[in-house]
Image (cartoon, rainbow, N blue to C red):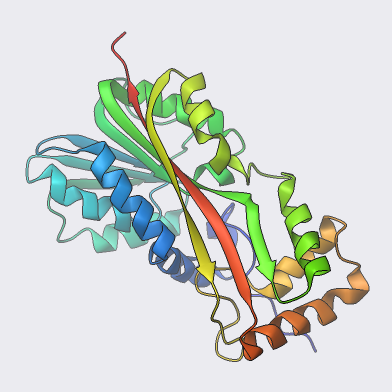
Length: 281
């Protein structure tokens, strides 16, 4: 009997997921990725937050990144976090008790923000846009609520860069080809952040990228690499994309697990960050 899937691909409908606890745990794990930490440090330097300012985090998740930035806002500053998931907001609120500034976490729609125009001094969004039906609308909303002269930071993945290497070049090519094409969501949006920010009126100031690498994973101890999805979930996605015959699903998963046990497993994913400014009207 096949083990039920608990580490699937996706944060599109967190509260409806039967394994919401796994998703929350993985959010913490992804926040600890070396690539995520690198881009958050870059973001902090480029936002240049000051005491008393207002910061909005769109798709705030567990609120961990925004709560670190709250230190820069000081006691007179304000942090607002918005996320579509009640579970995420509940977790963020539970972590906000020792925040350095006034904090409000609320459920909301990134594409139709319930915030006044020209209100925030800075806006950030991290790994949120790839799950939205209209990421351009969300970026336009960030532009609307940001004051002239305010800065925005956008961080997201480009899944077209995803690689899986287990010593089989044919399989590696199949995975890479499958990830090149977007389907139900804008999964490769990381590579388009700068042009999308420019399209809604932002002036892009800087951009950078960081690549997360997994080369150690014990499938007998964890169903998925740190903060990632299971290989069974990846196999299902490859089947749906026409890159893996359904009859090869179990064999694919077993081959990846064996490679991980033998120390010949590697995965990579590149994330992109953009900093931009809303110029005076």
